[in-house]
Amino acid sequence: MSGTSADVRALLPEAEALGSYLETLLGPEAPPTADGGAGPSGRAVPALLMEAGGVQVALPQAAIEAVLPWSGRARRPRRGEPPWLLGRMRRAGGTLAVVDLARVVLPRARWPVAGAGGRAGFLVRLDGDWALACARVGDPVLLTDAAVRWRRPDPVRPWLAGVGRTPPCLVLNPVRLRAWLARGLKESAGMDDA
Image 1: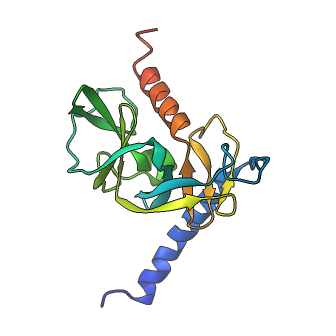
Image 2 (image 1 turned 90 degrees about the vertical axis):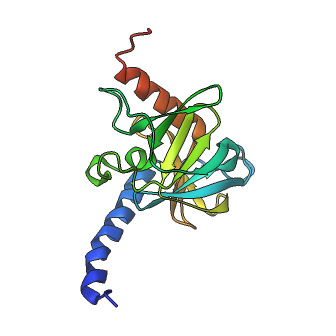
């Protein structure tokens, strides 16, 4: 077996770095809801776990249209488009923008190699014209106040709703994520249509 104690020690700093990164994302904690429930709605939220760039991410199931295997093929992005955009795919009734989820949630220094999509093997299609490329799709989870440290939106990561304690994960706000992606795409186009 090739797993030596040196291999384990080499992985430890990476795990500690990811843990530290998750802690720095927390910022100010959102106040609890009036009835003690989870998130803005005050209810527990069913979510799907995904992995991107070695980080677990939870996305509310209500925002997901489909989960599809992905070969990594998409029309390449145009020059000047955001680095998190892997490209576009045709779909019935329009075009789907494919986003490298790892490049959205990780700091630039930890981004996967350009075009690798964090070894994306799946597309999680959001309701609308966006799909998130991720390495793995996990089990559904129920996000409650006991399981998540909710946070207020900030201008840098408005898409981050909170950080899960059990399981440890980033919890995405799909409405803010779509708005952030659309704004990034529009700004990269030089706002020609403004």
